[in-house]
Amino acid sequence: MSRKLAPPWRKALMVLHLVSSLGLLGVDLCVLALGVAGSPGGSLLGHYLLVPLAFTSLITGVAQGVLTPWGLFRHWWVTLKLVLMVIGTGLSLFVLTPALDSGGPEVVRDASGPCVVLLVLTVLSVYKPFGRIRRVTKVPYGTSSVANGTFKTQP
Image (cartoon, rainbow, N blue to C red; front, side, top):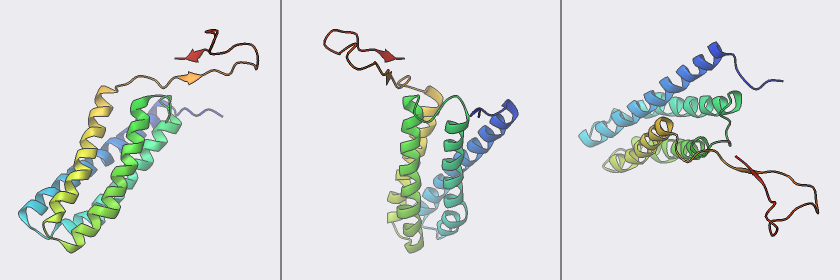
């Protein structure tokens, strides 16, 4: 079974991921602005937009990793994005959303964490740093060792 999507489906998945990710960044920035202004409207944004967009972004990102040649664990930047997106979703769900319900000045502090994470994810998507994750090839037992220099890695 092929893990690759046909180009039209891959592009549709990419559009859904981009819309949800950039929408998530926009909503998080709006929540931050409402928190600075002291407006209580951030709670509605948090419950009805932030959480669904965070999960949509996470799910479509994982689907892209699994269903496209990028893979989830082939490139450092993809793996780092996965880890940071899980952390960002957790921050949004377990830190920011409860803070929005209570209101107050902690909203600004709690909304800034996910904003920074989302901006780092955007930079990682554009620059794609760190290259590929090197995998160690399996060598039959007794035929080579690290000591004699025949230990091989794949790029």
